Length: 392
Image 1 (cartoon, rainbow, N blue to C red):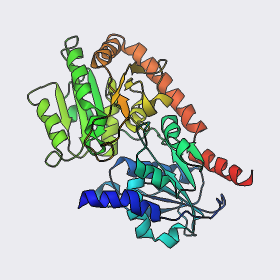
Image 2 (cartoon, helix red, strand yellow):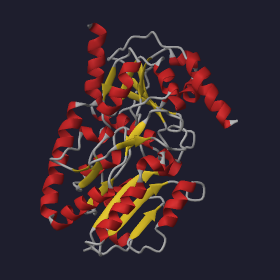
Image 3 (cartoon, rainbow, N blue to C red):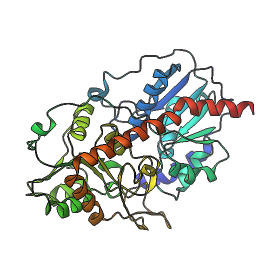
Image 4 (tube, rainbow, N blue to C red):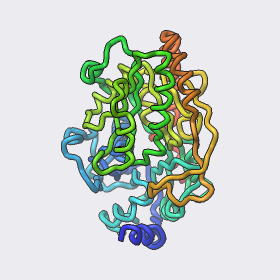
């Protein structure tokens, strides 16, 4: 049944959604539509957008279309400036497979009464058919990276503008090492990932391998990975946890941690290690940079916009065919992603371990670069570009 629905959604429902003929009006409020009360990447993307536009003084409204709302985690979240006036435009922080249900929930007639902007975070150079069908009814598209823009722009006549996630330095809890029994003088390596967005794409296995190579140089080192996912329901996550069972220097945490606790973990780390195969942006990498933690990152995909040899430790990565059972990435002939080297990553860990002051200086450069990059590519500037296009 699920397979049949996915086929109908991709090839029938996506083609039935009409494109709005409304022009973009910068003077009217913007409605943010997304999984606003869910602890998932697209939900965080929507919340970041709402906060950024609100802080910039833009009149906004919110539309939560969460399929599995988490009332506890986001009960206190809300931007300070909310409008009750009808929106002139909407930013849909939902990838195309999520859109038919959300548009149906809000009403197809209602959909055509505003200028619709899709915020699409795709992670490969090859774009699936359903995404191409979803582009058809968007008036404009925002993407988190130049990598994603190059993949999507050739497939639509609508404007495609890069707007990175507006990362800020958020509160970070103290005492995270103590919370997990990690000694204050241990060299702590961390990685945060969501198993639901393809554990193979996030590639924590390579991070574990790199850490084990590095540990020969630094026996007191500790790897702590925070995974969002359900071990009892996710076979890949269950296998990953089993692979480190009995290893006293590696821990995979699947319990709930608040945003402040996650930031505290990253801030208390000596290095952040992301050997992803592909990223549309690389939100946790950017968050680690904002916390002034030295970053080791795959030298490919979305993170390339703000990670370079001057501010990060890049891992050379040949490209290999995508082989994955995740519905988003299965059955994409010709698609490739990175295969980062654990050996190179381990060498970078050694460099950071041996020269911590130099590593911190480099991490500060990364933060300065990221702040400039985010300011130059904000939501406000993207909306200004759209307004200029309407009058040109």
